[in-house]
Length: 478
Image 1 (cartoon, rainbow, N blue to C red):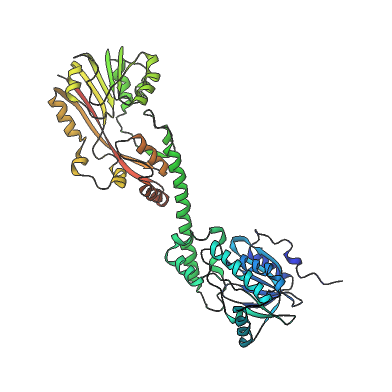
Image 2: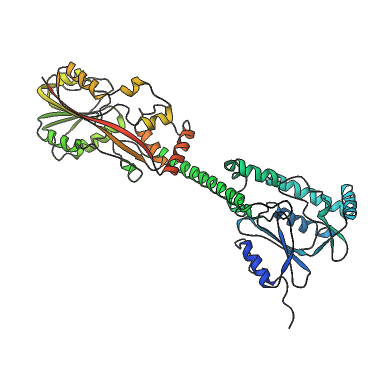
């Protein structure tokens, strides 16, 4: 029976094959060790005529194989039987077996190569051309390697050149250790899976603990980069999402906020059901008022932002509500003493003299206000530290005093500090586009650095936590 062909074990080897699997295939077929260097180890076929060079990580391997193929006609490179890129950036070259030569003979060959003639001239042309391609396409390709050990003898007796290209290992591994976030941008993750598994047989040893430390550092850097890419997608999605109206359904599953225990929607529904003439200030898209089963006999609402006003008319108009599109700071569009109820959820800036003017004697004001320093942890992430005056703004005691000064009697004042939690950076983009007064000049490009930093916080901690403040204010017209 004829002996198996030495290339038979490679029949199933392709880009998806891990290099340890190739090694096991060869050893099972009778291949044995015949050498190792810093970047690769070699196995020789059972008949001793063919060698498999296996490198766990070799960025320049494809260029070396390209040289062997394109310079084959010169007879000055090894005969290459097979080249495969393997899973994770490993490299396999199967070639004729070569033998070392005395340094003097190798140096003589390199001297002739430096001033080439004939076949060596053709070899020099191919070496230079492929090297230029490698330098152009690879971040870590070094200059030509003129080491005499790269000149070897073929079985037929002539000299050949091997491995003239190399990755700049010292700088490559130094950057990987010192700045992993920058390093991972230079080589795709799928091409450096086995970066810490090279033999280092000549310049080692490389302690296992240091290899593991580098692996973990690169894994974390890859995770950060993946999260940044995910964050960019979330930012882009939220940057074009609809923010009209005053509903927050887009945040379902992406952000949460505790609700005050007084239940404003329930209090509002009770109040408007008993009112004769009522007006809801800053109604947004009418979402909260629209939840009330029964409205006042004459129900009015105001809104200053045109898209919201249009949405409020569409929602509330069929129920007989008159929606007034106003401008900020304009008087309430009702006569003196016309209303027995004024309501508002999160009014922009309560105009207490106007509220007192429109309420009839004994009429009631019922509102839930945004309190002081609400969501300021989030806001300050983008704008930096705020002033004491800014943090004091909307203080419930100040608003109650202003209401009293305008002729109202405050009958109830309750406060709450509520946990807000954002589970992805897109939710933050959306809320800042929705609540435009939080960061007035917000734009995803202007604040991209801060957004990506917040995305990293969310990745690390699972969410970004801030706190809102609210107060319930009831008052009666004297």
